[in-house]
Length: 557
Image (tube, rainbow, N blue to C red):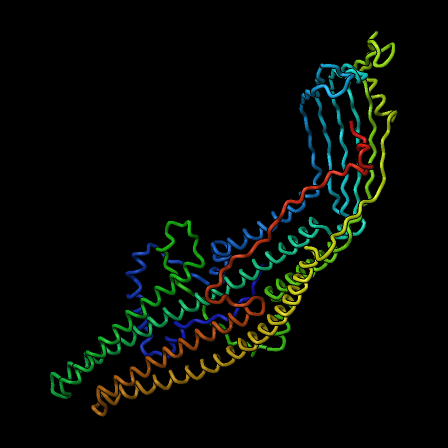
């Protein structure tokens, strides 16, 4: 992902251009920065591009959003597991002892024991909402009932079944609804990452130019202090020869104390600005995280043309990531409406199944009147049972429809009403965001224009203040001006230079905001770069077994 570079500016260069004695100011600034730099260990000469690159690679808040995108991708994959074939197997043993309940059993209870297993695979189809099931069932039964024909029986069979919804769940069901929502949320998460990247880049550029202006302000305050000290030196000589009263010296020394305080405040503000930039771009795992000194080195290019507001608004309405996410939310709301409309339909399902079974084991041969006397045993092996199964000697099949429909106001009816309201809300929210985006772009363009005009006015004011100070100093040297007037001229120059720095910083900030807001809104107070993820509910596939008349069994054992 690439970001178009904004116009770069150097507040330090601007300050030096309007300050007399540039070489003295530069030397003073270097002397003031020498001690912190020595304590830090090393300094990074930083360009805007380098700062942005470091932020994209190292910023932990941006990494959180990037990982959030990976989480949403995992949720999409999680919904796909609902279409994976499910293998299941059951192996068990049971024993049932029942007391005698008829005259044929006499006084002897009936003992029946089973060793059984069932192994199968079932799957939900990713289209149409149908499910299929294939299983292999076996059972070995031993019973002493006088009514059974087998002393030991071996049953086996294969079952194939299919269930297909015809109205409800055919076009969309809970699983496909979740997948559609999760897929769209994955897209929104990617958009949120890009939005966060734009916001992070904008924050880095704001911090970069703020640090640049803060360091320039240190230079301006240092030069102002030097001018005040020069005036003190001159006044000491003049007081000693009686040219000016001692009060002028006191006034000049008081001004030195005031400007030293201003320099201390400017240095503290520069350190705070450096920490803000460091927080955005440095690797927290680096042991020298807080000791590295950052020196912004980019210089300002020529001012660009006036922004085309209409083109910028059109670009924002088409490309802004928050609007794209709002459209995805509107799509999710429409998907919910479609889902709940489908859920209100009658649940009509086509059910079919086929089961082929075989029976073998030790069969009792009886003669005489009922229940007969056991006179022999016939044994049928497992291979014979398999032959019965695959030759379909004993087939069982079913074809039918099942219908269910709630009477009265259902859960789906209530959810449909809610989802319709949410869709309307999403549409109004998108419209509101579009209006906000257009207003923000127009306001940002006005800020670019007005700050450029302020910068020109501030530069002219600084030039005039410099000329006035130069004139006042020459008048003071020949005794035609007072210490008060010289001090006032110095203050006016300081104020003009600070105003120029602030106008320059505001102009650069306006350019950064104008560029960024064409793709993403600015972070408001209290906002975070996090994303809200979707929730996935596991919906197991049902196990179709066909339809049979109640009381006749289901073709099983």
